[in-house]
Length: 373
Image (cartoon, rainbow, N blue to C red; front, top):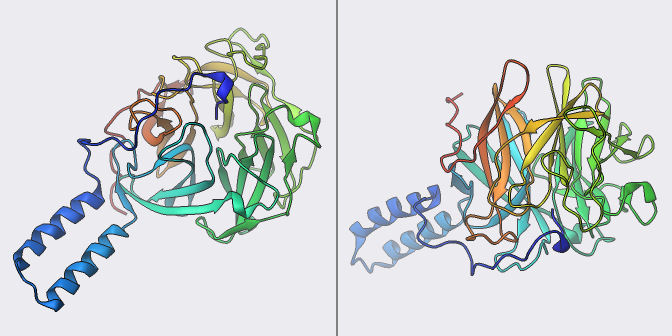
């Protein structure tokens, strides 16, 4: 999430773009059903009218969407954290308001798929009301599985990170500890903006929480995922020559291309740790990454994950699903450039023989569907 001082307030759009060439699965289903119902016209029989009404209600309640980018168009979603639980891929998102003029989000949503072609919208899975101690700004979430439970890590108030726990990927979730896990009023080491939490569970079972705007942080979690198991540490980022990357000061843009802005996300591949992050809020900023030999760094800047996505904020995640890798991100194209109203997208990601990410170019089509299983 970027802050109001980090970029211009882009001109707003009145709502979701009209006349889009994309036709959602919901719309297709509605059209098909409407054509079949036309055979009843001009039937005024009460039973016929009742049957038509039931069909319409069922269709309007459908929670499935088509797979090209953006994934869903009927709402604005952002800050995607993609996780694989069982045979489904789940994407936890923040939820931009349709008339937003700032990032005044109040809840978090969930999408899922089994084949990268048909997506289920699980709706709102948690809100600010679930944290009695939180007041505003339901920003970028994450979710992990441990101890036979699912743990949501949620930033609020621009200063705290909470934990909610549930028995299934879609919840219901409840506040796990009744207070913030991270609170910069009580933990100076958390930095000025402890936002954008993301968790890595390593092969040995150790868990690490990453977070922070302009100053990347990491802290080890206990086995219950609800307490800190060590001190909050600064993450060491090195440039391509191995020199420390200078941190941006408040109200400053990070130095491109390797400077750290926000949105940390760490994954492990072939024994190496990939530290993905946004390099700021400039017109060419994007998701970049460094590689390290330890989950706490240092990470040496390696390159771009992808080209710039059409949004002042760059936030995403990388995940492997059924043998393929994907990068999730958001854009503001659906709202005609309003960066307070964003939409989650996905594209396939590949690696070179040297382990480096082949830079992804955002597409409209999105990835190919996976074979039926």
